[in-house]
Image 1 (cartoon, each protein chain N blue to C red):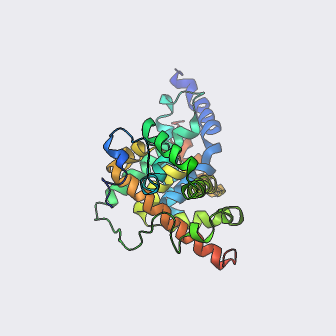
Image 2: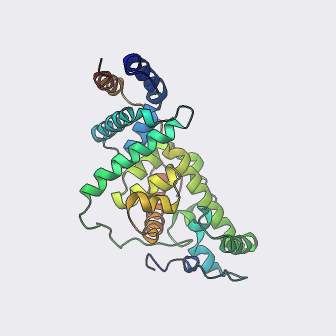
Image 3: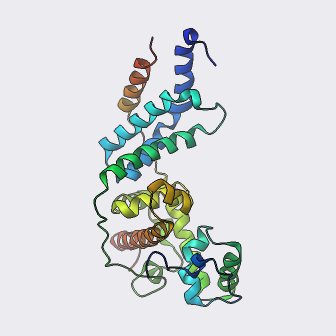
Length: 188
Length: 96
């Protein structure tokens, strides 16, 4: 590896050119995970990038830097989240609506036309408004593309809980999108 | 329906030859997420392909998940101040 004497600036330049182009993506993920909390998202990005910098020696150039940074940010968030969320789950059991059925988004728009008409900001708002216990699994699985087992391991919850939170979180998202679509006059 | 019993596939029994609509619908997300064992995956696919009730519903849910995945990426930009702060902190830790 680099000699200590010549390494400082080169290493920093290398890190900056590899890592800093991903700041926007990191910030977007942070916003999604925190539910749109901008100051907290900025802190999360800053902490994560500094962690990455401190372990830059362990990163192999040529591998996926974005994925590496996103993982660091995810884990940083989860560590805070698990520390803060030893509180009991606030899940309420009001809103199970399953599959095709009266009043669901599918019932109102089976061809999914609204997915072409709603703008991305709608889904982002809908995600960010979800309670933590639904939002975090949805962001990890649906936005970041993690599998059930990875989500379960990341959050330290059983895989069955991941499945039911995804199920219920997705139904909540659909209900919210349905309401947006009605407000915009896209659906009767 | 509780966490552990949802979806018969969780039990890891061999998949039956024929699934009902109800059984298929209970597995919609595990199927679309690619999380089912191969025999269950095939059993759901066989049912959905020939079921005029389930087919459009599965199609709808697939569109929904694609939409969330694409739109969820977002287009927000980190502020120039944040980038400057990070650059300063990194320089501060370079030790020179």
